[in-house]
Length: 559
Ligand SMILES: NC(=O)C1=CN([C@@H]2O[C@H](COP(=O)(O)OP(=O)(O)OC[C@H]3O[C@@H](n4cnc5c(N)ncnc54)[C@H](OP(=O)(O)O)[C@@H]3O)[C@@H](O)[C@H]2O)[C@@H](O)CC1
Ligand SMILES: [K+]
Image 1: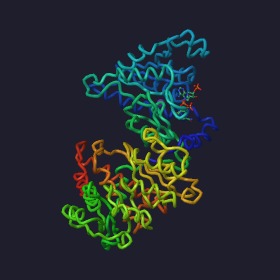
Image 2: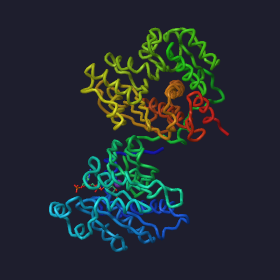
Image 3: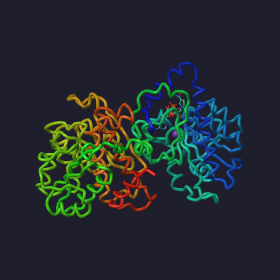
Image 4: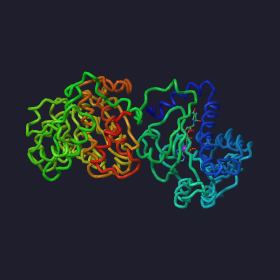
C-alpha cells in the first residue's frame, strides 16, 4: 500500500524539524536519495554500468527543489559524473549552488530571447548573474546529448505548470529527444524528477503541459497525491520514496494506493465452514436485446471471481445466453424485490429495454449495496434529486459518463455548472470527490489510474460537507481499453460487494479506513485491483473481456 499525502500534510510534518534548524539536514538526506536513483539510472545507460564518463544536466528552479537538485549534482560529481546545472529561475538555492561549484560542476543560466533585458528586469543575484547564459536551443542540445537529465525546477512549492523559457525548453526537448540509447537499449537521456515532475500538482495530480516526462521520480518523506492519480502518475515513471526523518510525524494519507500484494492478500477467500450464501449472493440486472453480451460477460466475471451464487434477472433470450456460457448462474424473470441477495449489480448493457430499466430502478432504491454501471448511471444520477444514494451504492463511470452525471446534477440545481469530459480527465480525483459529495455514493472513476472516492464521516450526513475517503488503483494493461472490459469489472465488483455485505469486517486488514462505511470504497478498490491484475496475466497482450474473466481465476489461484 502506498499512503500518499497532501502537500500540506508533508509540510506540517517537516515544520518542527525546520523550526529546529534541521532544514539543511533534511535537504541533504533528500539529495542523497535523489543522487542514488540518478546513479542507478546512469548505470543503465552505459554498457559496463560505469559512472565515469557519463554526463548529467540538472534543470534547477529557484526554490528548495532546485536546492535538492544542486546537492544531488554535487554528490554525482564526486562519483565522476560530469554535471552541468542550468538555472531556470531568477533566484537559486545558494548553498546548493556553492556545493555544486565546489565539487567541480558547471553552471549555466537559462536566458530568454532578450538576455540583457532579462537580467536588468529580473535583478539577478550575483550567483545567478555570474553563470554563463545559455539559450533554449543550446540547452536542448545539452540535454539531448546527456546521459541523464534531472528535473529540479519545481516541487511542492509550485503554483501551476511551467512558464517562460523553461516551459519552452521542456517543450522543445520533447520534440527533439532521441529515442535510442548508446547501444544499451535504454533510451537516453534518462530523466529523473526531483520530488514531482515539475508542474504536476502534488495535491491533485493535474499535469499541465509542457512537462518533462520522467523515467523515475524520487520523492521525500511520503508519496504525494499527484504521484498516484492521473494524469500525474502517467508522467511520474518509477516512484521511489526516500525517508528523510519526518515519517513518524505524518498525518493521515489523502489517497490510499492499493498495490498488487494488497489486492491478493485482502481478496476474500472462503473458509472451511462457508456456504454459498455466506460467501455472498450477487443479483445481476444486465443486458438488453441490443447488448446481450454485457450480461454474459459480467455474470461470467462474477462467477470466476468467486461469488457464492449469481442470480441473473432478465428475459428468456438473455437467460439462455447467460446459461450457455455460465450454467452455474441462477436465472429468472423475477423482479429485484422478489429475490434475496446480499448485493446487486445493475446496468451493463441495459439500453432501450423497459423491463430491465424498471429492475435497475428497483435496485437503485433497494437497501442492499449495489454496483451501478453503464445503463444504470443516468437513472442513479436522476434519483439523487429525491435522495442521496449512500456509500454502499458504487457508481462506476468513465470520464464521459461522469460528465453526463454532472449534467443531470446541474439540471437539478445540485451543482453550479456542467463539467466537460476534458475537465474530468485533467483532474479525475477532484471530480470523483465532487461526484461522491453530491451523490452520496461511492464513485469509482475508470481511467489510466482508477480513482475511488467515497463520502464517509460527515459527508455521508445530510449536510453533504466533510470528509471523503480516496483510493487509487493502477497498473492495468492499456489493452483493457476495449468494449466489454467494464462489464467484466462490474461483475468482479459485485462479487466483492456481496461478500463484504455479509462480512462487514472482511477488508479491515487494509486499514482502519476500510471499516464501517469505508468498506464499500475498499471493496471497489479491491475489485478494480483484481481486474487490473487479470489484465496482465499474459503480460502486455490483448485481453478480450471473455479472456479477462478467465484470467481472474488464474490470478486467484494459489500455487
Ligand atoms: N521543506 C523541506 O523541509 C524540504 C523540502 N524539500 C524540497 O523542497 C521542495 C519545495 O521547495 P519550495 O517550497 O522552495 O518550492 P519549490 O517547488 O522548489 O519552488 C517554488 C518556487 O518556484 C517558483 N514558482 C512557483 N510556481 C512556479 C511556476 N509555475 N513556474 C515557475 N516558477 C514557479 C516560486 O518562486 P518565485 O517565482 O516566486 O521566485 C516558488 O517560490 C520540495 O519539493 C522538495 O524538493 C526537500 O529538500 C526536503 C526538505
Ligand atoms: K521537480
